[in-house]
Length: 284
Image (cartoon, rainbow, N blue to C red; front, side, top):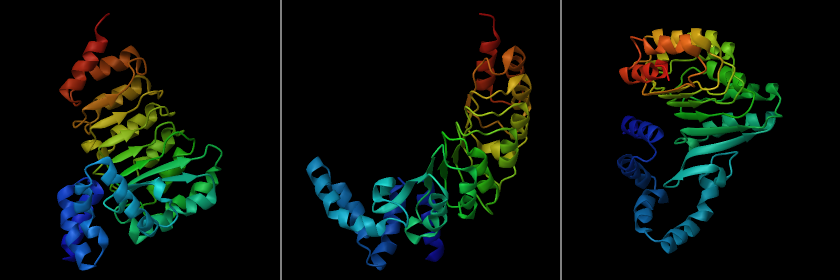
């Protein structure tokens, strides 16, 4: 049973709306006499606004005890009485230190989606303790709209294992060295969506990305508003790891005419993307 339970928990981390997995998990909850074993049934019956309000009122006293340490219930995303996502606001060192005990809390065992909201005034050194948190359970990490992206990458770089499917570091001050560090992180074979728009990533950073085997399963890559130039576009066009891409966000003026030609003549990018860049190459 422990092995089967671990499999169910992995399914719920990856897909918190997997109803069948929740129903399978309810069996173990009943054995523990956990009232959440019956919550899925009660939620199905709450099919009107009045019944939903009544159920929320009944659950309110329990939410504090179901919330992982260091979080407020309103900062959590809930499924059937469990926290599956959370937002952590970081204004200084004390806030950053909350992450490690939060993720270690048994009540966070289904917390697979984390959003870090970093105060622009937070000193870079205040984020050092993020590396002490075990991030291997996370499937989605969003840490955008600040200038401390390199610190986030450093925290990822020090993880023994990572299982991220979505990594969002848009508008976070990343540069070429940040991207090189990212490509040195623990294997990220599950990565599917990578958001890097509006940073300072140039041709060198894009070349490092293009050589990164972790991109082999990525379906969405967003590099808009980065100075990648023609050389960066050529690196993407020649990469052997971008065959699964369905979406490549890139403004046509970023790579310039030479870069557009490189993308339009790629033999490794998916055909639909190559056709798109051929259309950009055509005279207007």
